[in-house]
Image 1 (cartoon, rainbow, N blue to C red):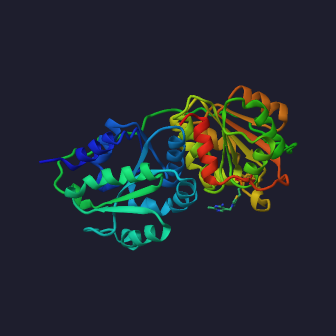
Image 2 (cartoon, rainbow, N blue to C red):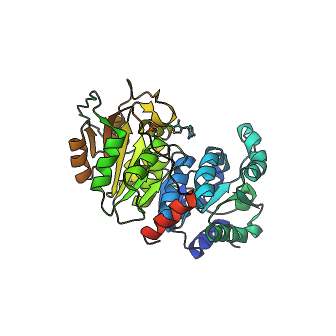
Image 3 (cartoon, rainbow, N blue to C red):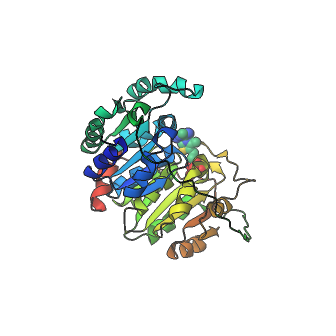
Length: 371
Ligand SMILES: Cc1ncc(C[n+]2csc(CCOP(=O)(O)OP(=O)(O)O)c2C)c(N)n1
């Protein structure tokens, strides 16, 4: 008898899938350890973050897949629309479909039964796999995603795995450890503007990749120095560092990310992912103006309460700096620190719209990185 979990692995391998971003579901607890054994795996803490990481991996030349519980699609819709559908970025998503087949958990019912309609309305392709006899359709869905550069969700019924003899994972115990934390972190009155900080980055970046945050930062970078190795975000708030991480894991070049305090606070999950993966070729420039600058400088809680450098350290990113002056930023960039907390004034330069479509941004970027 064919073991369904092994069949899925065979399909992933046949399609040259080289990385899986995963978040568990009880129904696929037999599949997940097999994926980890066969394919490089990134464990996620929130699915939307995985969409950004996988987009970066694809832009850098890899062929990722996401393996999640279907509830997580609710956390991904904006990203799938504003990133994958907008830039034509493929992403096969294998989702354990909860809420319909023999579902005892009431919390799964409402969204679970409406998922096909939700995906339809969002313009996201999907395939339903009701039994192990239909597993071959995963192959078709992955090919559709990569050949047509679009996301494709596979809703996998729990019926597929019934009676399967795959082992349960061995539980991991917490690692006993001691953390001795000492950091004097002083946030002073800002002296630079974001525009000046980006100008410094543009002057230091040579053949490196720059991924810039949505809104004003991307427009400022475009005006300061447009180049093919710039990847401009136009939406998907919170995912710029996720894309940077995916690129760092798929490219030899150094990756600089221009992120913002509002955006990092929307997706602090990315800090956990960076702290786990620890790529040496990634620098996050956390431009902290204590405001949602692009939407009118509304205050964020970095103004008095959260210190982003401490947040990065708490997530395992240890090579951090705090900078207030252009010269300090130049040094931190030269040292390629992992996380540069860059304190700036809440000032937006008046810049024009970027005259490139999302597809043009993606295509010239991928050509420039050789993909
Ligand atoms: C999910 C979502 N919510 C809200 C917005 C609106 N929005 C666009 S940019 C932005 C502020 C970003 O602030 P920050 O990351 O601090 O960067 P800054 O503009 O200050 O450089 C907001 C709230 C959005 N695009 N997406």
